[in-house]
Length: 237
Image (tube, rainbow, N blue to C red):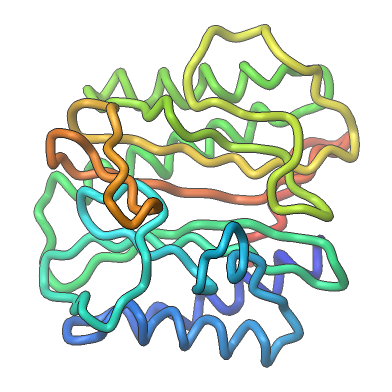
């Protein structure tokens, strides 16, 4: 999993120069898939539940699970979130990053920064003896104190030989509840924050999840190993 995370983080570093005005989300997906395969990573999203792509690429009011398309052309002001799972020798790493295209609204920068802080603070809670909901409560607190919503419909999760494993990690809740974190657990911590309402609508394609009110949304994710010395983030260089 360390190898999977390191390789995947490297791929996501290289994609920065591709998330530009005029690019299509399908071109970005293809670039990531080719780079993953070149480094020995298997794109786990492809084929999952019939999904046809290596990544989910979500713009603006899309929270998660945006489908790459040659019809979606990036323009200045777009807020892009890319979610990807790669496996190395059958062990998975799961991560999501955001990107700004050209000049974006200051609100976009603000909500993105709040989500980054929420993720960073939540990772700090991934220590032996804490409970799952300590992570959840940390994310909710950081988002709501800045006036943003926290998505209820989707959650973080365990990750390992499969991209989705126990335990589920909601992004809201009271601290001190749920499974006790133990050394060796690997978690995909995944805050999802909205400008306004946290309610979700699923589009006709069955995947794309948007905010019901059209507000901006952001998702971030890292794969984290719980160790006796504290959390180790596997998907950062």
